[in-house]
Length: 323
Image (cartoon, rainbow, N blue to C red):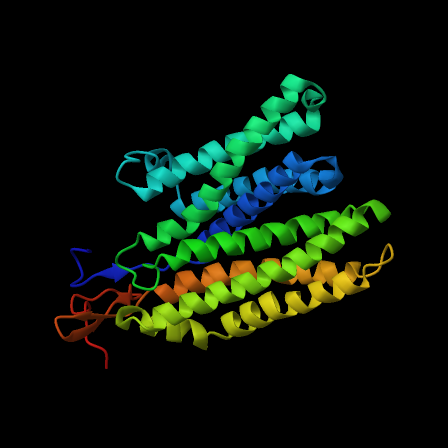
């Protein structure tokens, strides 16, 4: 509450926070896939290497976006206080531990010979298992943080963390595929990429089901119905996310799977589909953040609309009924 203004003022989270949520998801998803592939065996070595190089840097850059939005690094130090009662504090510890584990995994795997000894291999495997746990926790936290915001009905749903985890795995998968296409090793890369293209198509279908279920559930609730309508009216969401971020990548992944029978074939379709899929993941988070704010509240039979801070706050502006 602002003592100078009568009412509750609300500041929208914009692209910096959306970028943080996106990069955190990409980093967590890419690391999870890389760590699992590393535990499976050497046949998936390139995807492991690319995923490790994406995981830690993506999360680090995402954290810089968060610090930029906070305005002061000192605020980040305070964010870790009271993890027993604050999801922001829990998330701070989860992300910090994940960053440490992903960095250690990257260094041990890429810059040492630890994997060539039994003890070193066991250490890397242990770090990988712990890293997978905290990577999944990081992916889920980006949605849990929103779901824990009781004042925003559109976010207050158990489907949000599930949607963000699925989207994080999809974008992490696309990021690894894009990296493998850029560092193509010829015939050795062909079979893994072809398999990953089919996996990506299945993951995109799963994300479509998740977003449809989320929007349907939000539309059925009186307090979040308006936000569901708002997000479906956004051209960037409908065209940028649904069409370019989901439908087109799905088609391109299937085209790449069918055409990648010889080295070099299908790589363009795969790369374009991966880039569009990554862009779609960012648009999803920005749209959910923006459209969740400023809903109409139904209280005691009356409807009230929360308003954003005006350019010149006036004492008469506050909780006003919709016109």
